[in-house]
Length: 592
Image (tube, rainbow, N blue to C red; front, side):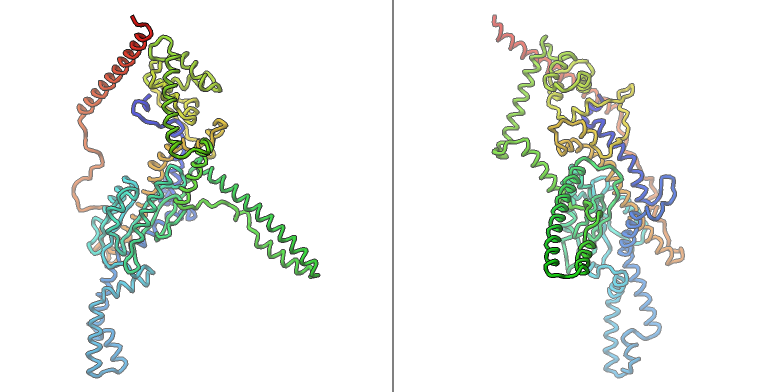
């Protein structure tokens, strides 16, 4: 009832999937941060993701500290050469015995050029030692955080706060954007050599998120393709799909720790079937070649040793069982193409072969309108008393005609789910919603519900080997697996918005924390604590508000009152309209 009032479309199956993902989320977060829920360090074998994130943070801290280290090297060079009186070129020339006036002025000129270009020379030396790109610009770094809005904004706030007290020589600029929306328009024109981009990628292995990941990858590729003097931004992607973008500098993959969704199983089954066919073809070719070679060896009279060596080498080259495993590392474009092909095949199965795409759209519209009219006629036929409402008996009577294979108890479950206001009757609009309900939703309605006294669902985590296993078992024979997987789109979106995005955000914070803490320790160690600062502090003396601004309760009550009044007026208009139409029909039948 609460879901119907709020307009939510979430089902108990969605909640069950979300609860399973939520519980497995704890293990995933432990691997990301390297600490279990009790605060104990995980074994090193379970901390690969954390180590990779911290390594990326150390790399970016080298970018930030580049100017400071170059400044120190310049200071040491100037102090050493001026104090000793022997600049580099002059000292080499004097040691070589070149003491004439001509060499004196030439060496002094070269030393002056070294002093002028000394910061750039020191930076080049540092990059050679650290094996970083030599063509990055020698300016303060700008970090762009790209992900869904809440992750991008929270990541921007976290990173900017870490560097709030950092010295200006080791400061950074922090920007954020949504790679599926405005990242390209707002930030790619600012991309310069040395810009740092971290982008979260949705899990495109799920059909509801494939198009979104393709858009995100396109944004990253566009930013990474902007080059100057052969250099571009340094981009790092974080996500669950184990496929590295060719133009990205690094890709960090997060373990999912969740069962597969039905769409992933469908692709795995297709890939396994194709692999089986390829293996069968390979075996047939191998056997035919082996037979021809045996006959050739027998006719030529060669010895058994040669046959053993030939067949032995072929045996060593045979793929193992592990080589036949299906790799799930696919680009979002490849996944999108696979799902589009499956969707087109499903459409061809249900459509006539000689119809065009336009004709299919028109036919669907006509069919939808006819179904609506037939539903109206069926409703009026069952509504014997003309009240405009159907009770349980009338609903069971009409639903048996529509779905003769369903049991009466299951039909009553559907009736009570459709009875939003709990009046014990269904009006026409409620009946239309039920009559046009897809098979996936009908199967969900007839499942057992576990609710408390307030009507709230008490959902247990899914125990399926893969999400959609029970749905696939109980589905009608004419329902394909890919069609059923479309009913999991909302579950996949819930997983992305509440689980996967959270894991990407935590991964970014681990990377940013390593980046900020290394810069903090550098100044503290260099100055023996005199120039140290705490990166968990800010210059502000104001308390940071973590709650939203309070909203007047009177305003909320007024809105609720107006909403209730509007609902009553709409219901009254519907009743009056229905009564008027019924009166007109009776007038036409019995004119007097």
